[in-house]
Image 1: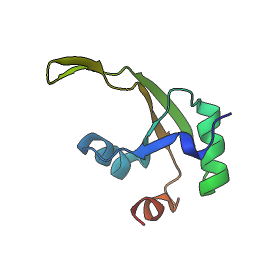
Image 2: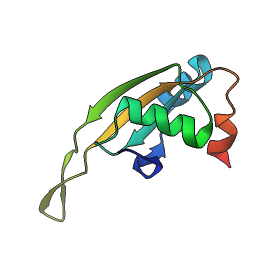
Image 3: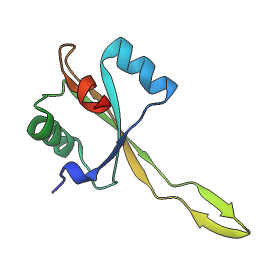
Image 4: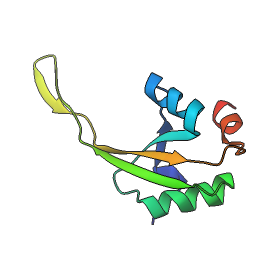
Length: 95
């Protein structure tokens, strides 16, 4: 069962900020076990917002080297959550 602790962060890149301003889309990084229905439930229970649509992308961890040691970053899921224009989510993320 997914809950609020599975949300890692709200992504604030240039692409994400353009979508947030134009289409009221919030980009959220979560753990790989989060599902679309689970994320909808979290937004409804904790933020009081019913998302209009949710799209997901699975991001595999990059293979990196650090001081000669090979490693891999953690995998995560990225969700594009479209919220209503009058939603008060923007003030919650900056607080």
